[in-house]
Length: 187
Image 1: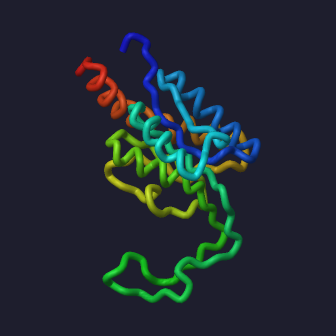
Image 2: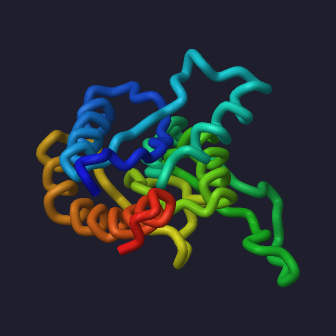
């Protein structure tokens, strides 16, 4: 690949704890060591209307996407579909409790959907106790790693060494296929 970095879009909420920042920094360093450059639309660049066009153009210029699904909103005690009853014609129509759960940023969903529509390989990394819906649901076309903890730097380091690096290498092979095809160097 002649030392050319493979550009991927990094979708993630802005980190608001030291542990989230540590995880994000470690992820970027790990990706760089693998020859992967990340780009992200910065929070100050978001606007309700222009962001979607800019995001789509940025994602089209990438060979893959990493969705880092940090918890963004915490639900101490909550309910989804309050009063809902089971109906076979609808998916998961009944009321559900979501006590002690995190919800990630809606932009992880939006940016992930754009990656799907642009047919680029996706790696989703999900925090422990995260509500799983939309793009975060397991799918055979998406590489997904679940349940990392942000309780300590040691737990983050352990997650990288024992779980994430293996999945990262598998996903890297997928983005290399796209990269090599587009760059005209089919291997």
